[in-house]
Length: 96
Image (cartoon, rainbow, N blue to C red):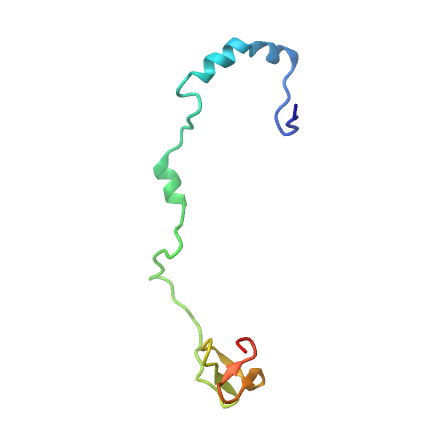
């Protein structure tokens, strides 16, 4: 039989209290497996992805494409000229 080492240990008095009849009676109890949890409280603490971020403000400076950069025609990302794999097709090394 497997031993659960994380389970709290019981002394002999506690072990004798849980007789087989008590365990069988609890098995038929419909409310024994239910957990009392307030659903609204749990839902308020949970933040969904894509939540309303309209009150947030981004401070990112967007620069136009520089002379030594190109736009890959496969992934449409702007790369430095050193990443150019095919000058005719304008494709970067990652997409080549």
